[in-house]
Image (cartoon, rainbow, N blue to C red; front, top):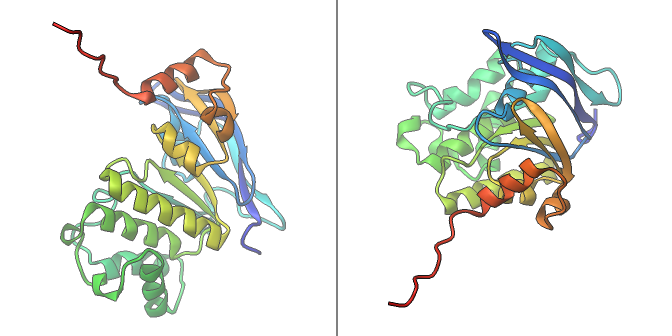
Length: 257
C-alpha cells in the first residue's frame, strides 16, 4: 500500500451520551493525502468526531470507513487502529507520568507485535526533532512542546496513514505552536499523511488545511475551502460569528480628554 492511498469517509455519524446527542447526522469525506479541518465553538462536537472515528466514543448509528485502493480494515480492527492514530490536546495528560519516553514509544510497538523497536524509537525521536538524549526522560522533565513532540512520535511510530489531531497546539505558547505546526506539515508532506485536524483557531486551520467543516451543536453547518475562509467567502451566519470571534478583542482608541 503506497503512502497516499488512504482517506476516510464518515456518514451520518450519531453519538449519544446518556440521552445527550453529541453528534447528529455528521458526514464528510477526506481524500487520501488531504488535510481537513473541523472548527466550531466549545461543545459543537468537533472533538467527539475524532473520538468516534478512533473508537473512544460510542457510535449510536452511522458509519466510518477508510477509502482508497485495495482491501482496507474496518473500524475496531487492530489494523485500523494502526493506520489511524490520534494526537490529543493535552500533551501531559496523554503521556503516562511514570513511564519514560522509551517505554511510551515502545508500548504501541509491543501491542501491535512490531519488532526492531530500538531503531524505530530512535527514528521517531529524530523525526520530531528530539535526539536520543530524550529517550530515558519522564514527561515531567520535558517542556510542553517537547511533550507534544513525544505524543506525535508515539503516533508516528506505527507508520499510520491517517492522523487525527485534536487541538494539537492549543496548550502551547505561541512560538512553540508555530514550531509544532511546521513539524506536522513537514511530516505530512514527507510521509504522504492524511490529516483530520480539530481546532478553535481559524488561522491555524486556514494555514494547515485545504478544506474544512464548520460544526454547531453536533451538526455540520458549512463546508468550505480554506481559501474561502481566508477571503471571508462564507454563507452561514454562524461561520461569520466564528470569524468575528476569532478576530479577537479590539480596543477602541481612547477619546481625547
